Length: 328
Image 1 (cartoon, rainbow, N blue to C red):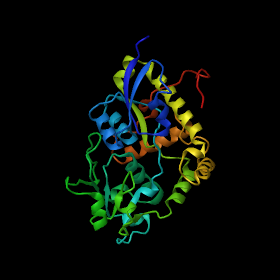
Image 2: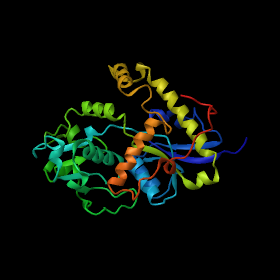
Image 3: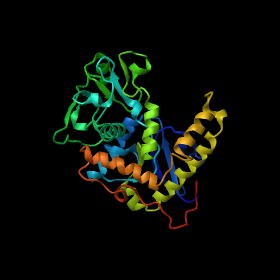
Image 4: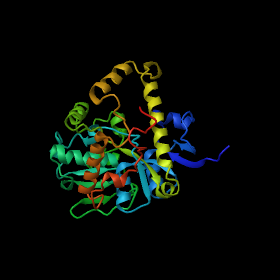
């Protein structure tokens, strides 16, 4: 049997990656070792800092900053994780914060400054709600996925290791917190914390109807030397990602597989609002507009020195006009 190229791939344990993980979809010519046990933050750090994986799901913001610094990575236009972010801005409920502009002049925590969710939240607050990112004093908890020097005028400081942003929010030492995930005090029902947008779902739907953007969080990065040595790899990987996602979407249409009473109704609501395939891959017009906004925010907020064009950020996975073998 012909020898296959052995590659490691680190990603979240998503339904859209199930077929790749289980081996029912195999990229041609590639033996893929799929690693899914890591949380997102260590995976991004280990890929961008330590280069531990050949291919990895990685923070979109961290990837843009890495490319801006000339680090040897490329990316496929595959977007494993998207999420609306209005519901992840948490406030201390005793601070009189009732609307976004109440954050101006406040102390706000951010898990780290480069994480993609924070980039989107700061950009949305600035562009859609009139809260300039430099009007806030930022406190960060984690080190960054790539080196970051705060730009002039940005009020930014790193917490000592023993401090916790979630504890500081509860204690009122900070006024608000941007988090990629639901925070422990909120899920525990602590009345001292709440969301900036109590009706966050309606805010997110309105944002989508206004912009057409379902925010891209992560891309699939690949070491540049693999692309240089094996230029056939990106297209073969891309086709496998597309097949895996198509199988997942077909499987997820069946309400029997999900232990939720009104799952099918939620699925149909998503289709009505976001369309048939809101998780689409490729640099479609919709995806290009989506990621260009992320790139713009990155440049505006000092994470990248220039506004990188998409053809520098993403590999070309075209097989030529009408020559692609696979269609979703």
